[in-house]
Length: 181
Image (cartoon, rainbow, N blue to C red; front, side, top):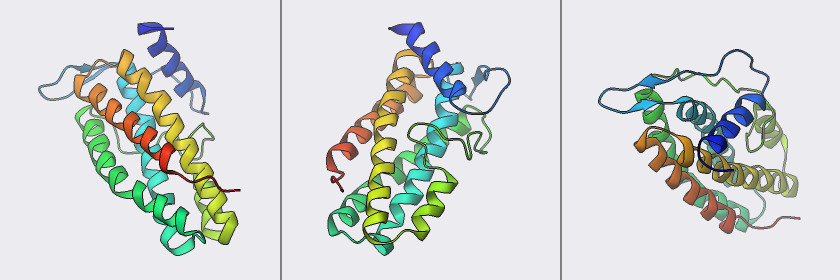
């Protein structure tokens, strides 16, 4: 599947993978930028909260992880994720999208939910390590998949370039996250 077909599939998966209903988001224009197409809009509406929630989870590791390897890996995720989140939020704002999380509470691949965060706050030791690594791995893998769709079918060049950076970071995170039994 290539080009517009991949983009349409990504938008359908994003919008079909959660409980929201209604029309797909329409194009938006930012000051001095190309129009944002539905792929750009759907991608930003998903990856901003995905990244924000994964960051909240990773920030718990210094106080809750029992493994030095898990603490180190989570720590290595935080700074790049903070930088990327700021840029994602800037792109979202350029597209004129609201800051609200349309997917809050939805169970979707790679999405750290409020329930996941609550579980992490109550987990201790090896259970925390196992859950955190599983969540961060799922997030990193899904970000790579979603970024491919944005890079192929997004209209805004800056957002497509940001997707490439997010994909590279997702691949880096996947490689550095330890295996936890």
